[in-house]
Amino acid sequence: MKIVNVEFKKGGKPYMFFDNNIELEKDDYVIVNTERGLQFGKVVSIVENKKQEEHSLVYRKASKEDIKQNEKNIKEAKEANIKAQELSDEYGLDMKFIEASYTFDRKQLVFQFLADNRVDFRDLAKSLAGIYKTRIELRQVGARDKAKEISGIGPCGRKICCSSFLSDLDSVGIAQVKNQNLALNPTKINGLCGRLLCCLKYEDNLYTEYRKDLPEVGDKINKDDKEYTIMSIDIPRQTYTMIDEENNKIEVDVRKEKEEKEQKEQKSRKDNRKNERKKNNKWFSIFW
Image (tube, rainbow, N blue to C red; front, side, top):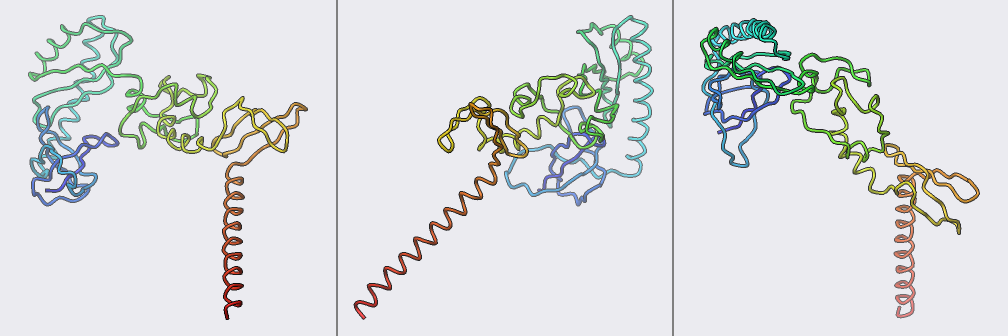
C-alpha cells in the first residue's frame, strides 16, 4: 500500500495514512481513521511506503454528501466557538477562544483557547457538553497558534511564515539567535506573536554550515608577520573583519580565500604532473 499525506485544514500539518488500496490522487478529499475518530481531510501528496512504517488507514474517498457534511461541521463549529466565548465570559473565565472543530462523525468537539494562566473550565465543559451532546475537549494553545490563525505581515514585508507555509511550529531557542550572530533585541528577533521568529529555526542549519570556516569574534590571527584580532563576522556573506594594533582593518572573504587556495593546489598538482612527465621523458630519451 502507498502512503498518502493528508491535511485536515488548509496550511495545517500533514499526517500520513495508508491508502487502503483505494485509487487516490492529489487534491482528493478522503475520510480517515484517527485516534479522535473519523476525520475529513485532503490528500496533499502520495509516496511509496519504502520504510515499511505502520499508519492508520484511509476509510474511504469522500463523496459529495461527505463534503456537504464537512461544510456543515465547519459552519456549526464556528457557531459553537462563539457560544463558548459567551459562556466563558458569563463564568468570568479569562479565556480567548480562537477555533473550534468537530470530528467528521461529530463524536468530539474540540475548542482551542488562549489564556495567560491555567483555567478551571470544568463547569464550562459541562455546559458545552449539555448543549452539543457530544464529547468536549478544551485545549489551551500558545501565542504562536494564535498568530497562525490570525495571520499578518512580518518584518520582512511578507505574510508570516506560520500562516503561509509552515505546517509544524517547532520551538525556537536563544541558541539559534546566538548562532546567527544577532543582537538580543526583542523588537528585532520577536515575531507578531511576541515569541522568537520562526525563521530563526529553519534558517539555522544554513547559518551553521556557513559558520564552519569563520573564526569567532575576539580570536587572534597571525598574517604577514602581524597579529590581528577578529573584530566582526558576517555569516551570510562569509566574511570577517580583523584589526591590528595600529587600528588597521582588513576584511577577509572566506569563499575567495578558499577559491584561491584550491587554485594554488590545482596549479601545484599540475606542476608536479608536468615535472613528473619531464623526468620520465628524460629517462626515456637516455635509454632510447
